[in-house]
Length: 313
Image 1 (spheres, one colour):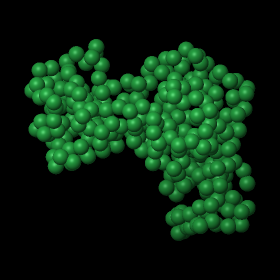
Image 2 (cartoon, helix red, strand yellow):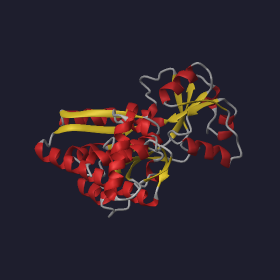
Image 3 (spheres, rainbow, N blue to C red):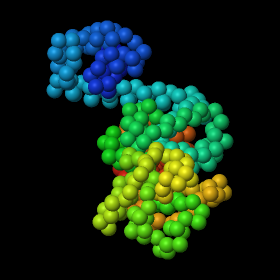
């Protein structure tokens, strides 16, 4: 039994039992993966996969346990490497972060600027995606930290730290009729075409729930993956935008007005996620404290150890 066999085994499962896809992901050959998995099964004296001809169709009951154990082993080996890196070169390495466009564009720049000044030898890598993708990148160990509003708390492989709450605003061109509606109401908003986030993003469920509670059906004419795209289509006159307040910059967004909508929609909570059981490099703790100063190293360790409740800010 060797490390390569465990990696191949998990890759096959992660790629839907498709050996060809696993081979492509690992830059190796399909026959090589099949051979290594057969050797692993022979050494263990059991079948990990149910087969129909040459095709893998499912995991056996024993295979479920084997894969779970293999994942734990790979995580601990990765932790050993992090321990070695930490003691060999405390102030250098890579910090990989998965997050949404809104966080990457409007929240993280100041944080990462301070971090880079403090740790100039640490290379920063940003993976942008929707919240489900952020959770997947984090739980798989592809990144050190995940930051998003949805999905993270639903992943059993992650511990999440609530960082801050935020709400939405309604983006309109200067002089739009909604500017004179005070206070702004959902009924007034529903009378206009709406441009807002895709269903996977940034509080879209809160927006839908608010309209539904009033028995209203919003006329959503376009959904987008980030606030900058929403601004483009609002400027073209396709509708009014519903965006995160943090995504509005008065100095740059001079063609728009942002109307307060915090009384219309429930607040959302941005969370920072870490993979359970992970060993964190020292500079990861520093990044966390820059992003969410309420979390000291001891508080993060307590959360990772399962000794703290993180349901509220």
